[in-house]
Image (tube, rainbow, N blue to C red; front, side, top):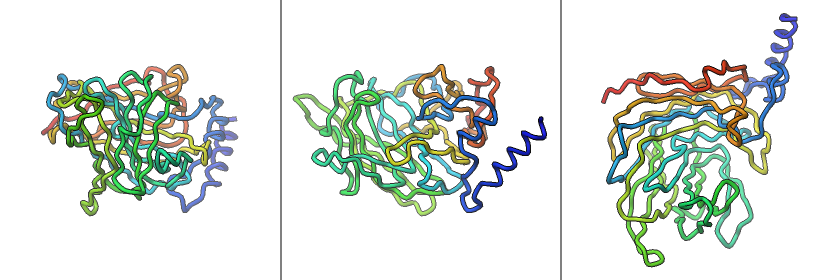
Amino acid sequence: MRWMSLLVWLCLISLVAANDPCEQPTPDAMAKELGVKLPRRPWHLANIWWFFDGPVKNFESLEMDVTIDRDVPETYNLYVSPCGSSLINGLQFYGGLQTNVNGWVSGDEQTRVHRGHGAIFSRWSSDKKTPIGLEHVRKAADECLVESAGYEGKFASVRRPYAWKKGTYTWGIYKGETIERDGKPSTWFTCRVRNHANDEVTEVGSLLFEGTEFEFWNRHSAFVEVYSTSEIRRSNIPKVKVTFSRPRINGEKVPLKRAMAFYPDEAAGSTSSPDCAKVKADGENAVVEVGAIFVRDPKQRRHGLDLTTAE
């Protein structure tokens, strides 16, 4: 029977198109071959956590480098998030690069449109229950998209079409001007993406955070996700390698206590995923390799990353 399984697998591989460097058998086909159940999308394929010595006061900027080893077509819904979850003064935000950004043209035009590859910057309201409106969002250009919704906690977001491909990029947010909103001070943080190939910087947009002085919490996370959209509800899993740098806050690498990888399973709920990714340390970087679905040893669902800490 073992050779029969191998034959079936080889037949599946033979169906892969040679002109798509990310293509592999469908998740359904791979899961059926292994006898595993696929959870609902979105799928957090891998999560990485960096733990610091303590919180960072006087927060001004966060920067993360991310390297993607191949072009990922828009036929996939891939979210490469160098900022998976961060808190400043207890206010949570996230962002990164997506193969299919979508959203509203404006608050007056709330028909969802899809713009292909792009960058995204989002934040939740302070309690994730109180609505947060588009007065907290500032577009960098007319082509930007926005959204204020509550299907994953009350959040506001700005997205901009951005034709990223194979290469290295810096995703970052930077403290801007402080204004008065509803009688209280609030501060704009602007998201920018730098392409290392030509050093070109693209502004994505800005989000407003309550306060004037900010403290970044004592950790940071990143993730790689396969998500769902109204145009591609059941995306395949792209074969790809993604490398994340150590976090830089206020222009400096943050001293680390430890780092770890986590692969959600069905017990994790909405962020569960089929096992198809492995994270390893490469010097001070964390490398996520996404490929075929496999059966993971439960003892390896969480593991440490032995990152170097050379400054």
